Image (cartoon, rainbow, N blue to C red; front, side, top):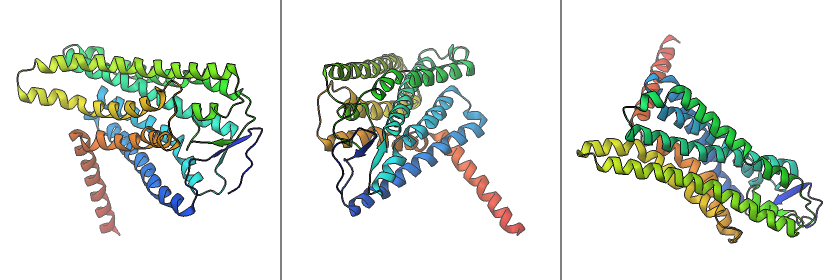
Amino acid sequence: MEFSNWTTAQEFIFSAFPCSWADSVFCFIPLLFIYAFIIVGNLVIITVVQRNTHLHTPMYFFISALSFLEIWYTTATIPKMLSSLLSERRSITLNGCVLQMYFFHSTGISEVCLLTAMAFDRYLAICSPLHYPTIMTPRLCAQLTLGCCVCGFLTPLPEIAWIATLPFCGSNHLEHIFCDFLPVLRLACTDTHTIVMIQVVDIIHAVEIITAVMLIVMSYVSIVAVILRIRSAEGHRKAFSTCVSHLMVFLLFFGSVALMYLRFSATYSLFWDTAIALAFAVLSPFFNPIIYSLRNKEIKEAIKKHIGQVSILIHKSKNLT
């Protein structure tokens, strides 16, 4: 496929996708399955939590909020990836690219804040169990979730607004699978101002990630200290089981995000850039419903209950017809 290498940057062309049709289809099928699983899995979690009153607790409220954000986090990038894999001209307009960056990062930052709030919730539940019901009220849960979303959607606005004003007079081939800050900034007409701002963007991302990680680690240090003081093995198991799902999601998500954004302008190869981006944009959201449903006894039992109810209704409807 031949495209012009120079443009006034009304559109960008993704150049990290496979070139051959066979390879594109080979990538399209598993990506479509993963996206469908993410959407269905998270919708199931939201529905089960909403329909079961015994799951109306702060922990499950935060899990359902995280599932809601995961749907939009993946929808910001994966549908465009799927269409690009089957399209001959894998392009995106400048405005579309800016919007994709904004919604991807705003929902991602909201998730980071929400995971931090979930760590605070687990800290209160284990370290202050007697005061937990009076502190972590439904009102506080809603306020924390709203605060996470407000923080998430406001934080990337200055970067997005600045990038939208940059002139793009060089190559329009974007060496990535979706629009992200650094790949797009590399296509801007480079000058001293732009180079300095790239470093500023790196620092902003680093502060966001390191602050969240420090708060979560501090919470878990306190949690572990309390768990170690519990004498019975059953007490250890129960206390740790309330945290293990959140800890796994935290390690999976933050590990891949840190590799991508704590680089301080260091460069990876296109292969590793793409692999790391897939890890936090696709694989991490894919495993989250598995971690929170398959490892959670209450959610599994609620899902089985609803499946049983649906089966009974189907059986009754067949008998009536």
